[in-house]
Length: 104
Image (cartoon, rainbow, N blue to C red; front, side, top):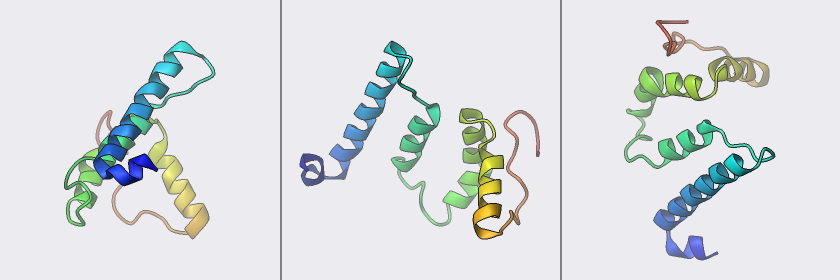
């Protein structure tokens, strides 16, 4: 409730603090898991002007898909399979750049 009353900036910092504590706990205990993709998603959501309608598609294609693939190998393939299974859709743009060399 306090985070909501304090505003979005404090809420974002609280989310970051939660991620840092989760990373610390993962280092101390084998039961706790921390994925780099969680930190990557937080950074993407809190970067100014990233979600503008004319910036996001280009940024996704040129950089973010490759970074997601590095953070979580197979993410693009899983996303395509999920889209095909749930919506019977397929990608109509070229596949994103493979972070380890050219197009897939």
